[in-house]
Image (cartoon, rainbow, N blue to C red; front, side):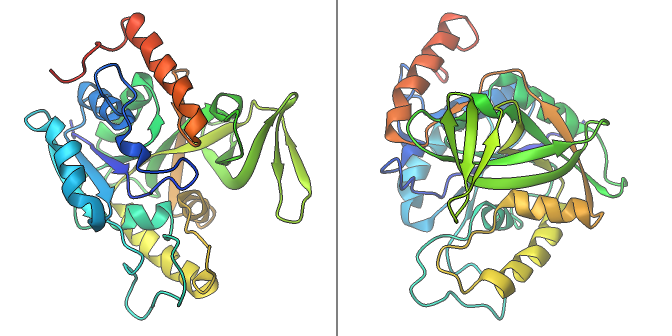
Length: 304
């Protein structure tokens, strides 16, 4: 059995939340959402965790986060920076925004050499999600083409915030359980009848809330790095001069599927998902974790 790696995307500064929300305590003994992620990954059979972070908070991150897992799981780091571009490309003058989740994953290409799961640092995916992911990734699929990837999907209505809009990858799934396409909608808001997405021109797309969405919990083999490098260069050629363009991983996955480069199995989790997009979401996350502890799903202190 292959021990997969957990790749945690933790380079973002949480502009809407205000501060390094990845280090904000959510559990009763100072545990962060990342602590629960690593705890779930360890008991699901992952062998290593790699954090994608920025160089400017490397020291404090290693001290406050990385040290917690010493002796429990192998820990490594990859670094995302705005100037981490392929040869021949430069950062447009005045751009400050990072290049997005696809770029963050690409930055780990020199560190990750085994099948791996990708998660956001500030999302709680639940134990079942990691178990499903580990089971899929631990199979030996090196000779299977197109590259066999997977994602964990959640019902849209269970991923919305009461306090503002969210970005979600809305999935179209075939009768065989395979992902057919994923569309990133960046301004979804909760309404009484479900949800709606507001387009840049002001038009609206009505959503029921039952749609399966990607919460950036993906399962890949190292093959993905070659695809991402190619798609990222195409993205830079087309949108690299825009100040706020982002290379979202759902965009790249959608391209891989359409070009026959990858197949993506959708693993639908019935477990809990919650996250902190806005500062006001924090109380809900703290309460939800307390409920899981009370139900015996997690110990009151994760790492003694």
